[in-house]
Image (tube, rainbow, N blue to C red; front, side, top):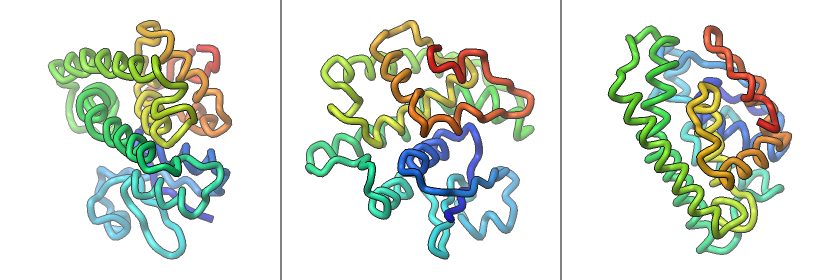
Length: 221
């Protein structure tokens, strides 16, 4: 059995959890208070970040590398296309959500409002929260533009790019920071991916002191 050191609302951990669940890979989840920089955890990942997957006697950090390793080890169901052009598009979108979306939106909303309180590192910066609230609209519009031409974000089939996006959005949805009324195509896309069995574990997450909104686990919103 694999072991995943994770934090429940971390979008990077959620991406790995979605891949594991979609591929029906048995895993033990170990919640890690990574910000406390415990010496045992730092031995697993000197960078002090989650997720870390313990598999085959070694510790593997970095969500994208983990997900692609899982794709190689457990190829069915496939989350990476075979042709080079579409693989590039999947990786491009994963980088978009892991980097730009995270820095501009998730870090400014979820991390300011929730992580600071959980980690006891101060109060939310209102300027960052406002910046995140503006940026999420741009990203939702970009997703809508993609979905005008495609069934899924990277093409006609669901891929790792969809999980990278859903991981970020599900974290924000936990704190009601997504306006699902902004675009029907994005809402329909999220409803499809949210209703997958792989999503059940995420929808069951509860962070003490931060109960999710009623619609969070509702498959019909």
